[in-house]
Image (tube, rainbow, N blue to C red; front, side):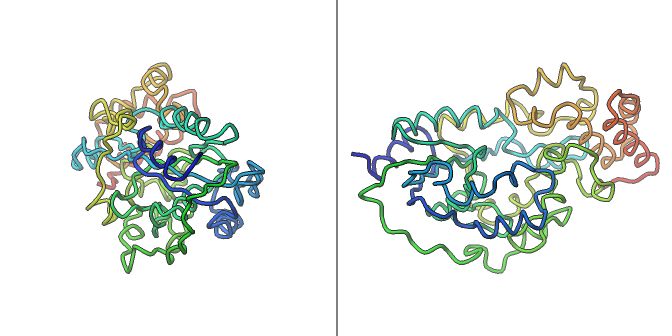
Length: 353
């Protein structure tokens, strides 16, 4: 017979670091999610606003869902020194994107897990209509911090989350504990809010994605607003600033010992912080070869070149000028625009270093 104990045992056996279980029902945080959408804070992420009612209750996805299982896998790695990541001559990449695309690694395992548990299941790794962080909090895997991340008290927040919806009820599932108070583990700490270079937090726990560096470098497909470019430093894909300063991350975050996590570790330093000079010389073919089956493929060549131009402008070194001038003649208008901006910034002697 399927049980909560069996589910936990199997999830850990498959290589997940965390597992939590809760009865299916109205999604925790649904009202806040709808208010966030209503305010337009999702920007161009139209997929989040498409049929939002499907995210409000897992039974809208699997009508006879009775149980939701949330798993977590740490992608922390201590392989790259902070001074390398902060080197303005390098383009910085968010930690989760240093290795393979996590969808390719986790999704097959999670789907097999769901099929093993039940013939009637749904498995998602942040691509389905499930509010994973709210459910993870409901399942006891941590609390949602002021930076909107799920924070595990003994592992920090560098966690991939996955969800499995099941039609079965579990006889040994413990009664639900009350949800923790808002930002239960944060106390008076505001390090994450203060660290955000673009001031993307409207309030504790409320992120205006339109100002978030992760959004600007990945989700935004057009021009980056000029007033935000100087604030982006050397980030070229994603951002970890609000997590890096978190006391739970600094004190407790550690690499996973799971074989699954090996795929997320960088092959070399340049996978975490490539030299900007090298990035600026990438052509489309080389980009596709280098970043195929990694999260960076999502930005496409034009997006990564746009971001690299902004980082080069913030670096402020004349060394970048020959490569920026070549990109200023690109057949891609988006790249031309940002290369021209970077050239003007360097020639005017401005930088964010």
